[in-house]
Image (cartoon, rainbow, N blue to C red):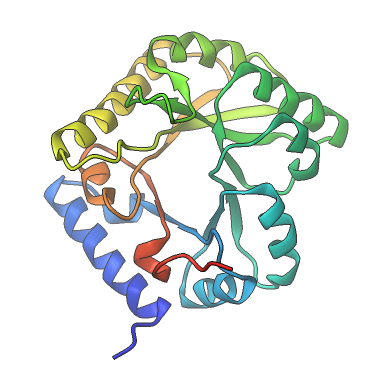
Length: 232
């Protein structure tokens, strides 16, 4: 029997509910961001029809080509790396930019927001695994960076994001997520003006249940909902 997006979503929601129950958490506090990288607008539309409200995109150019063909309302999230030369193209287009990983990028978003008259909600992306191949602020400087970014106009820090390490050692995966939660707690204790730690975006198809156990409020799911990415 072929599984539909609706079927997959129902199974994912059940897994989220079970993971939340094990952690003593309310599953309603966990948002699914359906990541539709390489999938066309018809897949996004089917996901929204199935009950998805939040859609994640990795690449700006793909988003710009895809979004106009999606006629149903949703909240778009940018979850992939954002180059500074693409900022002006996306300002005001995303409900949440999850991948702010440098002061320079934050400054570009702030300036473009001031020009366009919009305030951008952002997450600070943190490299909790220390892997050189990953984007993200280093853990040791993230609190200071949060204070600097918070002082920029036309931005609102709404939380933190990380990508777990691609390793088979589940303890290492959990440790990376624990570090993000600990950073969130340190930022909250610092009481920085214009900073909310509402969102902890961590966990993808292979590790979202671990992320929920460690406090994730937002899981970014692609393959478990849509199957393997389309190519060609």
